[in-house]
Image (cartoon, rainbow, N blue to C red; front, side):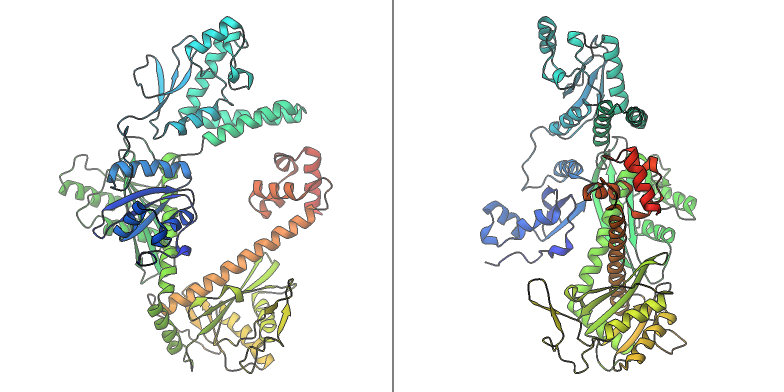
Length: 631
């Protein structure tokens, strides 16, 4: 028996986000649909040695020929999408739902003397306001439990309410603050009904009004040093924010729309198409295309729509795209003609972008899946041995190197307005990243990027092993555990700098000053993806769809990512060191400050009043933080 199935994806190809996965057989039929809070962790269980799997699981994975996944925003959205697709595809290995024709609703009985909120499948309660449907009872019960902190209205049964009236004692919900207890007169029936109306208004989407009011009350209570009231408002605000998390999977029942997400770079574009019918995602299509020309996103949208509807599929009445192309009106007319040709009614097609609400939330999810697909495509392409070998051979030929560049090093510089200057060095061997040999450089002072490149290359090339041997004993230092730490003594075949002629000239100057020869040097200019060689008036132009350019671009992007990451760490450490001098401000609160503002730049730009809004930071401490950041 084989250890595992042949279609098993690499662990690094699977995202760690929440999502829904589907196993398909060779004919494309969906065999199993599942959800996961962490797709990588969940799917790894299916690709354990076959003899260790349960018999039914082993039968499923051996019957399948492929696995695919769709990323969503959170675990609840994954649950919703799983439910939709199980009913859509009827996979043979899934447990079938017994009640797939009956959905739970949230109901508020506004016409009753003392309104009540409840979860029910009965749509015939007289005078009730309904919200839903929902795919799981526990999900809506959890939402009600959260919102009762902000809208403490009655949720008990009639029998419980009458018993409380007779005994004069409220139930547990009244004692813990999740009911205003009209049963014992803690609140009048009129005031309680006002709470119920607010609850219904919040569920109808008028959430921003309540959130704004609570924020004002919380700040006012804090200013008056009524901290108990401020804490109560804070908890209610947190409950509202939790319940307001938008569900990007289940939309209104009258929505028939195709959502397109596009992620692209200079060489390729990944497209995701979510097909929504009756408010449910009925299908997902994805494809990746190589780009001959570096076209704008608006031009890509036109090409994507022509490809998507060039076959048997007719467009729906509404198509949502990332940006509108210049000829949007003509495209709408063309899409409408396709509907006429297919004999569909309501032939007008609306082409639009999603700005807010549930459609914008789903458009964001589609875009996330497109970005993941592009990363997966690039990872798999660079991991293909044949493509890597061809790329290395093409680079050798284009740059007229004596040997193939089996070891390449790429350098990039990053800074923020001339401060916290850092540089990165990434290493690719045989076309694959060697992350254990990456290096980071901190540059104390520099006039510009070319000077930074010169300093970085000088420091790196000083350690070159001219004999081509490792000399690990002579060129190693011990780490904290006494083990030898490998330093960069290997000679690269190719040095790449991120930039054009000025950056290449600076790198060449560093090599000349140290007397380094026998190493090919080039730079890649991002604007047109040109390859520049030292002392050359014209760049080397590689074909845009070539594996050679793809590999050079990937190592450049990796160097840029590594440099940006280090530069952000430096900025964070700088502000953390400065804030550590403020009395009463520990690491936990520093972390809370950075999380609240999202970046060091926003924290530095904030005034004392904005800083005081952070949880655990009062006006006095906020003023100290403000002054410390300005000193």
